[in-house]
Amino acid sequence: MVKMFFTEKNQLKKGSRMTIASLVNFVGYKVTETIKNLETNVVLIAVEAEHDHMECVRCGHQLTSLHGRHRIRAKFLPIFNYESYVTVWRRKGSCSVCKKIRSEKIHFLSKDSPHLTSAYESTIEELTEIAPASRVADFTGEDKSTVWRLDFRRLLRLKRSYKIPKVTHISVDEVYARKSHGENETRNDRFFTVITDMKSKKVIWVEDSRRKEGLDNFYKVIGKEACSNIQVVAQDQHEDYLKSTMEHCPQAKIVYDKFHVIKSFNEALNECRKLYIKMFDLSKSEKKKLSGDFKFVLSKRASKRSEYETDKLSEATRNNKIFLQLELIKESVLHIFGHGSVADAKKQFEQTGQWIKEAGFPPLKNWFRRLQTRWHAIEAYYDASVTSAISEGINNVIKAVKRRAFGYKNMEYFKLKIMQVCGFLSSKYVKLHEDHESIA
Image (cartoon, rainbow, N blue to C red; front, top):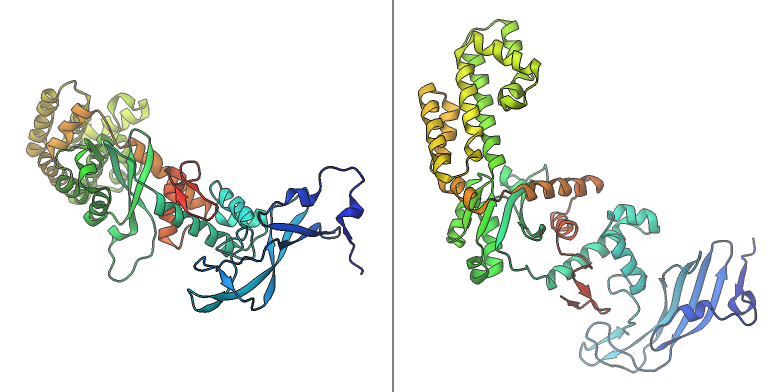
């Protein structure tokens, strides 16, 4: 079959103002020919240099003595309903600095891929800010690995120009990153440490693992002066985070998130329930009553239970006084954060500890002992009145980012995507020059 090619001058009517050539404006280059293929909806735009000056693609110095040339076809932005390509002769010359024969630098070509123009590359990169690389590849028709490579390299360039904003109130939390791990890794290495600015509600940094070294590295990156400006650090009860903050930001108020405190208590409460079932010789019907959704009934606030749940707990407390003790202790713990003053909260906490000691439940005794040594972190809640709830919300966004990409193999890329979607690492906050040099 004969391909249907025809030139631009035969297609456009006389007096038409807009031409495809007028849409292509490369400084130092002129359009010599525009050819369209109606069968494939493809436009070929041939351009050539208007000068003899050549710059080295590596070092930027002038090339001398022409040593040949080769034709390059690079994908350009779509023009109307046409898929467009730019063709240009790329010359070679001798570089006195590199001491080699080098190709010339063509400013409108992508540095990462010579088969794409920088304008088309920028379009792909902007799309990757709102969609995973695989979806962008499907939309544009490009190879998935090409789109991923372009996005990853751009994020690395943005990170090089990224400056962590000055913060005074931060929230620190971990997010589960991956399943597999190496022989020398522990479960802590399968998490990211995510640091969030509580005022802007943006992620400002992501570190590998939830070890002390991870948060240490963040404090080292921002420097001692920035550390001295941090006033409040909200976190869960992870001991490594506590030690790191106390070491680098001794002046900061460390606030234990009340939801994590209640969560750890509910876990200890559930351990008591399971321990009771194991210790006593119960019938199958009794075990069934104390299993399943009963653990949720036991941990729920009394004022929020349904009639069915209230009857279920009443039956358990009638048959065994242990559950009555657990119910009283649980209600007391829930009221610790409900007081208007630190003194009242402290009194409630000590009363709860006395009840736990008298009841003799090992899991709850361990929970109280750990929290008693860190009372200052609960006391700070009444001064700062903050929680790490913002981190929990961002963790849900991170999980959604992970799901829509069907997971990430490259952990560095995953960290950068978190900072892009949930933070400031995007074109909205960081701009790049055409030569890929970044400005804040």
